[in-house]
Image 1 (cartoon, rainbow, N blue to C red):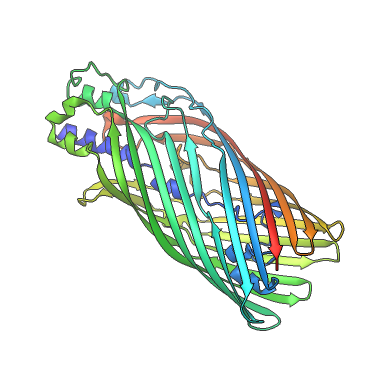
Image 2 (image 1 turned 180 degrees about the vertical axis):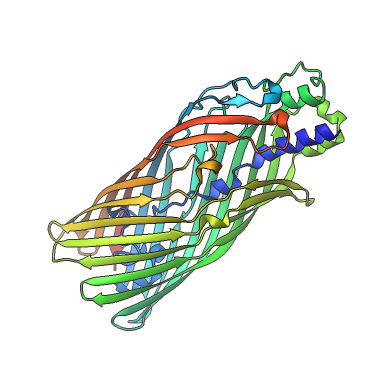
Length: 447
């Protein structure tokens, strides 16, 4: 019975591995006007109403009223190459059956909306709607790493009402409230064949190790609340300095855990019946806080230069615990993520009164230590190369477009399934070749 218990608990652990990983992919794509500069100077440039996200103090530099609508097509690619993935030694240490999983990336479309208007000469109100975090990786069902991940998806929507106050000719202050909804959906295979072969003598179905898979799915959603604040200092008529902070948002994702293809023989064991029962479950998810320092400088009537340094506190992800509503701990998964820095520089060139060209580069650290990398987020450090342009249609309206290619450093993976049962332990070993392409467009109207 003790042996069955270890195997059952280990199998359910596999269904929740990677929860915090689903939250660890931040989306900086909050406008198209900044995309062409790799978002350099985002907390200081205050070019349009999207400053509500990057630094609400920037609304003080806008026209009386302004509307911004933007959309982004994001296409990540993550190709895994198997390099010795194998079963546990207890089951012979043989190669794990399955392919490379196809490309785990998936095309995503993300919209943004911002509106700002003046209340008095020194006070402006605004609201932004955006997606500050998101993730989707999905592999083929029979791939070699199916026991660790098949589908991992996180969606967020953030509603961000804000206010800015122009305290003096040199100083502007801003503050906002965030109401963020997060929804997660994780799936992976469960090795019922090994459970049957190791604990129940085959379950009457002739099951052998890794030959009778089931499916586990964990879903949950929640609303959480946070805040952001910022300050912009007009050092000279041509130079602005910005400092902006965005808080953590705490979520308790309430939802369900469900299993498919559970062997009928599990009904003979109360422990297995309880472990693989469909029911309610929850997990805590906290998005990280961040601090950005930005510079915007107008060299002359044609050239602007921009720079940004953003620190993000991912180190709060030390571990993640998921539970059933009964209070039973489903799993505690170690994460041990690290704080990161993102540095970017950019320039803009005014060709004439209507056309502006942009360029930018950035270096973006990954929060995931190599020892804790998983197939749910096979992340690594990356370099951004961005180009863009803005065209003024009328004195009151303009369109922006930006394109970014992200070079992701190759990522090695050597991950053993998080399980206390040696029979269910498998090792996913290989390398990822990844990149990301982003195309953004935006319409801005002032009135």
